[in-house]
Image: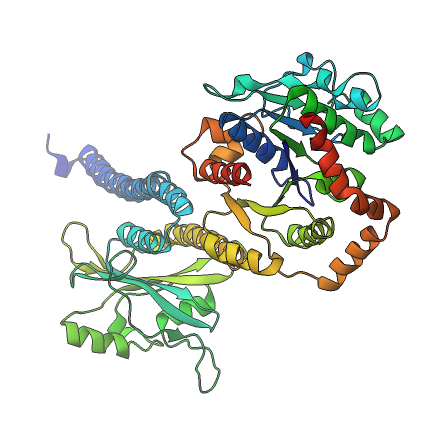
Length: 251
Length: 294
C-alpha cells in the first residue's frame, strides 16, 4: 500500500522543498516508485532541484485543480536526476507563471480536489511513496496534507519563531492522529552542540529529531539548483538526509 | 711693481681684502645651504621609510590581523608585529576587561627568552592591573600601561628608572630578579573605531639595529604605531563580536509560549474545517491509498 509523506514547516525559508526533493530522490534510489507533488501553489520551487525546465512544463497542478487535465498528465518523469538505477521518480509541479499563481490566489480552490488528485496519482502511477511538499504555515491545504499523511516531517531552523510555530503544528498533528511524526532541524551552525540541541528539542516537543542538518558552504552554494544528497553524498548533511529516508522506508 | 708703495697697490690690497671678505661670506652661505639640504634629505628619507613601512608592513599586517580567526594567534601577531616595527626587545599585550583592569594577554622578551600567552603554550599568570585604585576609585595613572589606557594616547619614556610621574617599582623588582634592565618603554593604546580603548600594547627596550644598544623609542614611529594600534583594535573587536554571537547561538534557549500556542491551536481546532478533517482523517488516509489496491 502506498505511503504518504508530508514535509511541512511553519515558516518559509526552512529548506522544506530542498529536503522534500532530496528525500524523494533517496527513497526512489532504494528502488521505490515515488512521486512528489508541489502543493505550495503560491510559491512553487521544488522544480528547481529536479532540474525541470520551465519550457517543459505545459500542465501543472494548477491545471488539474481547474479541471483542465487529469493529474497524471501533470506528472513529469524526473528520474534522470537519479544516478544509476532506481525510481521512477515523478514530479507534479505547481505552475511558476505569475498569471497562474495570480488566478489561484484570486479564485481560490477546493482543497478536497487535492485529496482526489493524490488518490488518482497513487493509482495511475502505481506509487509506493507520495511526497507532499506543503505550503508553509497552517491553512486548509496543509491541514489536509497532514491529515492524510502516514509520516509527517516537520522541518524548522534553530530560531525562536520556528520553535514557537512548530509547537502549534505538532499539537495539531497529534489531534489529527498522524501515525508517525519526526522533526528535522535545518541550517544549524556547525559550532552548535548538536547532541544538546537534539536533547532540548525532543524534551520540549516529545517528537523524535530525525536529523540535524548543518549549514555548510556547499549547501549555500548549491541552494536550490541540485540535489545535494546525490551530488555530495560524503557531506554530513547528505548522510543525515539518507538517515531520514531510511527511517521513512522502515516505517 | 711694488704694491705696497703705490695707489694701485693700495687698490689691489683693498680689492683682495674685499674679495676675501666677500669670498668668506660666499662660503658661509653655501655651507648653510648644505646643512639645510642635508636636513631636507634626511626628512625625505624618513618620509620614504614611513611610506615603505605603511605599504609593506602596516597595511599587510592589518589585513592579516583582520583575517585571523584564532584569538591566541591574533594576540601574538599584534604583539610581535609591534615589537618588530619598533625594534623592541620585549613587550606585553594587555586587554581591557569589563572589570576595568588590564589583563595580561601575552608577554615576550627576546633577551630573557620569555614567551607567555598567545600560542606559546605557557599561560600568563600575572595578576591584572587595575585601571582604578580599588581603595579610592581614583584613576591609576602611576602605571604607564594603565595611564596609557586611561588617557587613550601613546606614552613613552626614555629611561624607566628616571621617568618622573610613573611608578616602575614592579618593573625594578622584575629586573632585579631576572638580571635585566628595562630602559625605554613605549605604550600604545588599541582604540576601536569609536575611540574606546580595548587594549594596550607595551614595548620595552628599543634597540639600535646596528649596535643593538638600547635607545629611546623613535618618536617618528608614533604615528605608525598608532595606526597599528587602530588596526589591531579593529581586528580584536571584530573577533570578540563574532565570538559573542557564536556563544549566544551555541547556548540557544528554546522557549515556547504555551498560552499563545494553546490559543492558536484552539482557534484552528475550533473551526468547522478542522472538525470535518479530523472526523474524516482516517477514512481519507485509507481512501487515498486504498483505491490503488483494487
